[in-house]
Length: 440
Ligand code: NAP
Ligand code: HSE
Image (tube, rainbow, N blue to C red; front, top):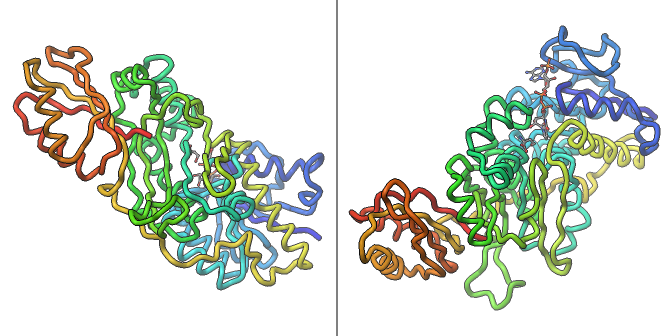
């Protein structure tokens, strides 16, 4: 039996996918039954590094997704359109889908999965989150017997590379970003990475799987790393922390809950730079590596670590999805009958996402103030008046003739903390509040 693949895109990930499929020896025997039948690209003139017959290339991607001979459409072209329309058209023509496209899934997953479930086809997306790290299938299968409390991860390689170099070399954000672009980690337009949107897309997908309900991407709180300064990295280090861009999805506590097992169907889903204690499992995940820490009952903590991007690792995830679909089809004699509940995404309701103001967390903040008696006392009193309890507040040094004050709070409600900051900002003695970061 041969299963025919229509590949939409032959860039970084498409090329890696073709390389694996064209060298099935020493891999799972199922891959010998997979054939790349058509390849859709933008330019037929571009030199390609994989040995595929020239007649299978086309710029007419519609012809691929409607081709009756194609079993599985592999979308590795990226972007929202025409990727979304092509996926929907492929589904309407009975094709199974494998995609690496977190942006299209996080924004249009609902219509795509509704269409797929109605058509009885699979949409698989292992490569869309954390590149080569198997995290989607584990969440759908082995981990799904647990009551998951939290999924927390470093899911963007570009920002982790930038923060690691700022930490280890004392380099500045702009200089490291330029290097990341030169090395091909960051896109020419790096905004989706450095402003956190790429990580937000990924955590929305992970949250949906871990907690069994869809998540609206515009409800995911998202803050990037452009404002992280060398001063913050150095102060965090002195306080025993590293700064990482974390993507976090967790069940929000019900204040009336008697135990951690007694939770409501309400989530926190957020991306922001975070001070992590140096002993935290994610604190030593460096460079372009990604890791996802899953916590549940009764399994406890599980951490998945590996390369979150790049040709080979991402292609490994794409091909594993192709293989899973082929395995299911083969077991059913070539046809998909009822969707297998451990591979399909069948939930339809939306999770409620808590507003960031209701978050209860610790904060780190840095102030530049006039150096005069009573400033620390006034700041401390204002926090106290807003129900914000301080763990420490110290004057660390001077910058441009201004006193630099750094504080860390106990767990406080974000809305209360922000209200206090607004008032403190209005004090004549306070010149600037250059940084406010959450602490895990
Ligand atoms: P890429 O290198 O830019 O390749 C895109 C491919 O799609 C190219 O072959 C391009 O054709 C083709 N293409 C794009 N738009 C097209 C259009 N409108 N019509 C026809 N062909 C079109 O992208 P990539 O890095 O492989 O990424 C692909 C997807 O994987 C994205 O969704 C990305 O987010 C995801 N992903 C990437 C990585 C990674 O490490 N790169 C990791 C995880 C997930 P030409 O070759 O003719 O230009
Ligand atoms: N731009 C992404 C990153 C690629 O840096 O992690 C993988 O999705």
